[in-house]
Every structure is written in structure tokens, then in C-alpha cells.
Amino acid sequence: MASFKEAFAAARKAGKKEFTWKGKAYNTKTKEEGSAAPAKSKMPQARPSAGVSSGRGAVQATARPGRVSTGMQGPAKPTAAQRQASKNAAYQAKLKEVREPKAAPAKAAPAKAVQGPMPTAKIRQEQKNKAYKAMLKK
Image (cartoon, rainbow, N blue to C red; front, side):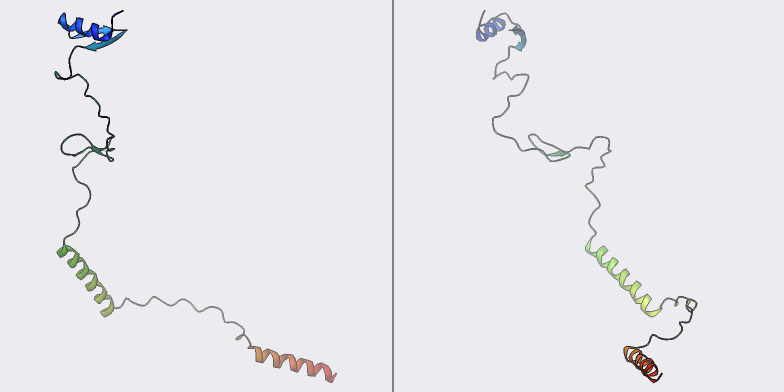
């Protein structure tokens, strides 16, 4: 059985673009001519972030599967003038509330009258003393 080097040389000499060696197909291109599959670098590559394709040159945004890409990252930040206008509108609304207070809500019906206020500790003690004196008199 011939070595890979011998099989490769024989296929190139015969002018073939592809040849088979040990059951696998190979092409007859050399490194200088460029192979079908680019050679992988032994250096670790940075992982691409979500939604971004990596490679040489500029990084291009890619759409997520099942979504339509509009080319926009999100809502634009408001300009300084827009922020100031928003603050002014909020301030004017506050002033309007202060100048024109809202109508007072209707009062609820008064609750049932309680049989009197709760006696304080002093009153309770006086009631106990009276009851004790009345008991002693009997």
C-alpha cells in the first residue's frame, strides 16, 4: 500500500483534482494553491457575542432566527432639548395641581355611634374603687 505522499504525487501527475486514499476523498491542491477548507489557526478565537457574526473585517449584526431585523439597536436616547421639554411639562402639571386642587371626595356616611369613649386607666381605677367600697358597706 502506498503512503499518502505517494498517492498524492501520483494523482497530481495524472492531472486528477481528487483522489481516494484509505477510503477517504482528498483533493490535489497544495497550500500555495489554496485548499477547499481553510486551515484552522491554533490560536484560540474570541467567541462572537449574541447576534453578531465574527470573521475578518468589520463585525456585522445578524438577525435572530424568526425575527425581522430593522437595523436598529433600540429606542434612541432623547436629546437634551427633549429631556428639558419633558421636565417642563411635568413641572407645569404639578403647578396646575397646586393652583387648582382636585375636588374633595364625598364624605362617607358616619359610622355607628359607639356607646361612649373608652375610659382611661384613671377612670377605670376609680370605678373599681367605688365598687370595692360599695362591697365593703354591705
